[in-house]
Image (cartoon, rainbow, N blue to C red; front, side):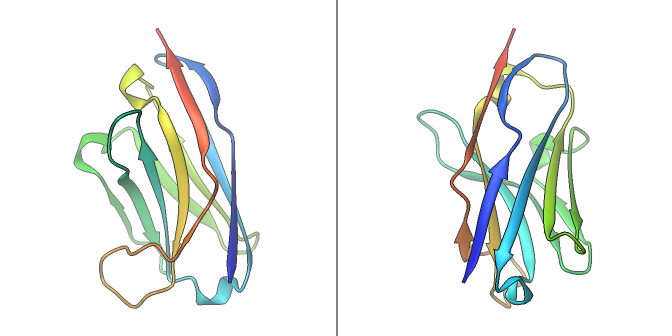
Length: 120
């Protein structure tokens, strides 16, 4: 089992930057990739970024250039930096861990989510 805890959400002004953090604990050795999802009110949850154990990253097309995912393996920490925030980035952001062998990200574990609200 893997436990994930997000932090770093809050109320932010449009145009500013924000970094979300995810702390992984438990059987972290089974994690093959980490990802960040977001779910805006009334919308489906979507994968915005993922990073493999080897450091390869993928991004949702609409966030490329503004979002950056990173990891600190020594600390079992994962991060999502969001630059130039817009109101459309308002959502609950979830950290997820993939313990599968799939080439596509398949979440095996979820964090509880952290709310990001962007004000104009």
